[in-house]
Length: 128
Image 1: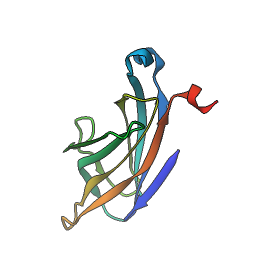
Image 2: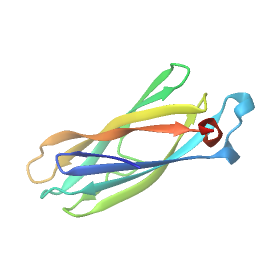
Image 3: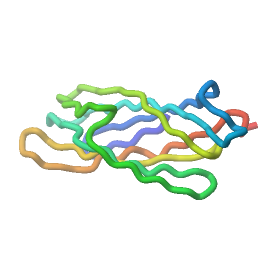
């Protein structure tokens, strides 16, 4: 698990390879990632947008932006957390992602980018 804290918002990530949905012969590797967002600040915050950078080991880069996460824009009171699972397709058995969540403090509308720590996605047999 990798973790990063920005202005009291902690983002943690765990990844898992999905062999049943992958086809290495066709250069199709599927990974899921579980993200936990914890509000460790004293302010209520809302997640508005996401911005991802997805890297394949072949040097390709994809950039993804959009509203919320998996169709939600969660509001987190101090001490609250939000978890979700999403996925990523790669053309290689090794890759990485990093990004940010645009957060807004409810009390005054101040916006900031909470960093999503860089995390790797590796097919388990590549580690041997």
